[in-house]
Image 1 (spheres, rainbow, N blue to C red):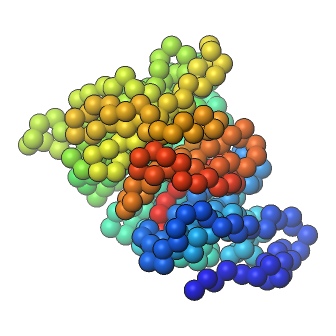
Image 2 (cartoon, rainbow, N blue to C red; image 1 turned 135 degrees about the vertical axis):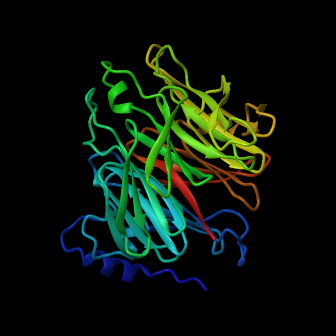
Image 3 (cartoon, rainbow, N blue to C red; image 1 turned 120 degrees about the vertical axis):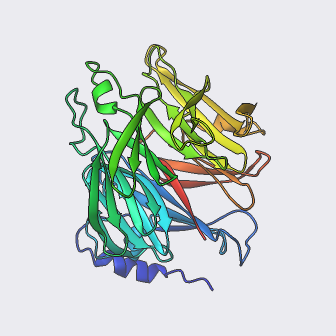
Length: 384
């Protein structure tokens, strides 16, 4: 049954905010076949919004009802005056809850995964990404203020009890930690050092921190490459880590971490692939990636899309979009792959100040549909 709210109700909900300006949600038909029992049933899209503008929003692609909903949060939470917040940096579902990491609002917003209704928030300074294990959430944090600073302080990972939404532990890692992956009872944290390296006075970080989960202690750091960002685990237990380089003479590339030997849990760098990577998603043996590599000397991005076989570590194709429609993407900014039917989703941030676009391609790389999103669409997660 379609449970969408009528325009009159939407008007009344918006009126509850008094004089606070709000952008009403939009409901648009989603092209493609509607399947009543589709799995996943839908996909959330977190739009970052421009820093300082308090314009982070959540969209929802409803695969079962064939509807795309823009700016869902204020409709479901009319009493939240400032709406979602400033700069959405990650969105994940764990259990029955939806977690959105709102970087410059220094919080993790917690909602019901099915209704998007607010449950609460966890206050974490300059929070970045979130992962889960055994009833706990782990959130990476730059800790210090949002500012380029050669003297920026060390970052941290916060442990949050998902039942009480209370912080129950913290561990200091290295500078400006970004994405994390959990495997073998350890958290692997990709440290960027972005605030320090971005100042031009200090080097970027080049390590992956290894945190023992039970003790919440950093047990070692693995030297990898400078300005690390993304980290993904494949089905063989290897970790794929992206380096953004320095945007000048050191290019972006991919690194592979694997066990030092079959009898050891210690991970070491086993491969360095001369392939630029801005974002990636693994489905089966295929690692889908795109790169929008900025070069200050050239003053432009070099964009590419590809697939790597994680088993062989070989590049399968440098063009997973096969119908030529990649030319319509100005700035690729997010990627996700449907775990069931293999559809590929790529977001376009366009000019960073106006609405973006979500593109859906079939498993053969042909465009199925495109839909307008909020500003700077970046992060996606599936609702099952």
